[in-house]
Image (cartoon, rainbow, N blue to C red; front, side):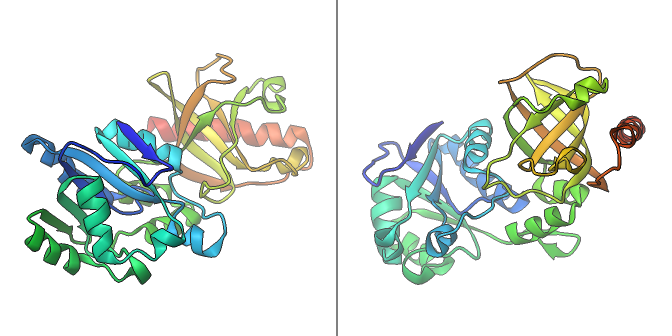
Length: 307
């Protein structure tokens, strides 16, 4: 996948099928949209994703916007799907004031050589978000490109949206999150050295520190899958600040991995959360903490046995 970022001066020579959107969470609706541009590869078009960096919400508020999937995670997911081009177009004052017709003509058609444009039915773009699906279809008829407008996807009668997925994650409902996204909620990154308390208790763990942009579920204990070097391991993950041993730690993800003894500091892993078991607790002693962790590990074994 070719990544185009930090520039407005680019041109894709090859004809493309372009999906436009925020793609936060890459839920089932997004996947349906992306499938349209991937299918267009059979007609000789290069699959391309167009998104803004920073997001319009982050630009207008000046605040860090928590995301279900971070920029780095999206890049990895798009590459794995087989996307040919990812455009992270700079969003600034000039971009915000761009008229919708100019967005289509100058960026999608000229810069990206779009011959097919796919978007959700609630798409908005251009100055004050005045561009919509109807405008895409109208200009498509005039300029001769194909427009694919994707209707909303529902799960059990409720429309799937990034907002809905975010709310479900905040509730800690990992099973529903997986149903909405098509895969489990995950965190990934480089394993860092923790306080090694688990190792001294005979229950060694790995530690990840999520980025500030990563939307996290409630602090607590989760049963999880850990992907390392192409293999999947079972685990128990704690999201939180480790209140029993100080509580001032940055929010992290600490995972005990079943039947795993390697020391992998500095290695890349993905931790997928499958089930929320209990809230994070502060124990009166390290002995109580050890007993609680032992119970979580035992309960996790039962959970995975019954999957």
